[in-house]
Image (spheres, each protein chain N blue to C red):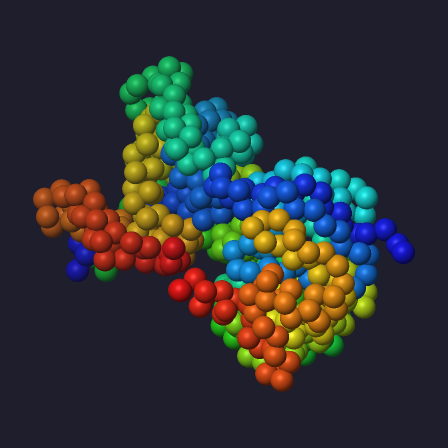
Amino acid sequence: MSTVLLLVITGLGLGALYFLVASGLSLIYGLMGVLNFAHGAFLTIAAFLGWEVGRRVSDGTWWGLLLSALVGMIVGAIVAAATEYFLIRRLYERHIEQALVTVGLSLASVALFEGIWGTDPIYTAKPDWLTQTTEILGAKIPNDRFLLIACAALVLGGIVLFLRRTRYGLIIRAGVENRSMVTALGIDVRRSFTLVFAIGGAAAGLGGVLASVYYGYVSAHLGSVLLIFAFIVTVIGGLGSLTGAAIASVLVAVLQQFANFYLGGTGDLVVVIALAAVLLVRPRGLMGKVA
Amino acid sequence: MSAPILVVEGLHGRIAGQQVVEDVSFEVPASGVTALLGRNGVGKTSTIKSILGLIDRTGDVRLGGERIDRLPTHRIVQRGVGYVPEDREVFGSLSVAENLRLAERDDRPRRELIERLFPDIHARRAQRAGTLSGGQQQMVSLARALVNENRLLLVDEPTKGLAPRIVDEVAAALAEAAKTVPILLVEQNLHVIRKLAERVVVLSGGRVVFSGSAADLLDDEARIQRYLGVATDESAHDAVPAASIDITEELR
């Protein structure tokens, strides 16, 4: 029982990370039809700069972590918005060029980060409580899982509130459904594009800082690793569906944990098989709209 | 006579590299309803979309004397052009109220007018638009265009696929709207055209082949047959649109 509980909560923590990356990917694809392969770069730069600021101000403390998270979100938002404004905006409806540019940016950024911070992982300090465990029903749960789950829940709630309660949220929801009709109502939908990139970048930035807490290090490849699973989550959840991304994040991560434990470390393989099964049985994903 | 609100000259439109509107020129007077007619596939909807910039286009399009053919769609709409698309295109996942709120551009949206014209829609404002009937969705689509004070309405096949009773309601709403704003109307139902339109522009093969008063066309059986491929039959309430005849012709 305690093992199952540990696997579930660890899965939820990892799922929280996947969701923080996948939420932006899903919104960006839903509104703009852009598969953003550069999303992992937003996460990595945010993780590095968040760590740089946090460790200089107050390394290994809650204050330092909070500052890292804030810096990570701001950096993620700015870099993502700049990417949309300077690169993607000229390439809407040109999907091959979008893929080439975002893949290129992703590869170039990894090389850049390796040039600045080196190729080896840099181990990070975190507040003492996050290094400890809490016993629940006999299972010793690492405390950082609770932080990850709480942050992802806050981000999910915040994005849902934004989408439901603000005019920009209304425009984004309508734009996901029918972008040209939004334009035909006299709305400059491109402004929303930049905003969605910024929101996605901020979530990924927070994900980057929390990933450094979860893994205990930052590295130039942090974003690339998480991006693969975030894409899988986005496809399984249904491209463009935030709720789908949230549900799929949890399902994929928990499945991964169980497979790793009970099936001899085959978590990644099982996730890929799950992706293939969903694509065969329900190509639009769990919550995606019919094409 | 006042200057036309819309002047279209040498308009060409393309979809995926294919010419769908070819050298179309016509004017829309500053009041009343002008019907844009033609058989299926002649480019009526594409002409409307070209004017709005929803498809690639070239040519000279002026709204109230100002050139709008180089403006993006949202800027054209912001200059006072309301659009009711073919197939309604309501946002199905949004509520009726959200559909209307999204369309509101003016500081003082005309909510009372919408409530008066479409009481059924007002009563269903919390309902998701995707769950409405086709007629109700058409009302939402019309309401989105009428909620702002526009200088011109572009209305594309508003009665398509609707029951006769709903057709009458839509026609009544358009007649009410036409009292305050000129309308360019794409419509297949000759009964509705006879009821609403003062002028008609007929397209064939992507070009204008007739432009003049509605009475001149509608009272001339031979012209109707030639341009639209349909015979008028007032006694049958004219619910038979040109489209159904076209389909038969295409099957031959």
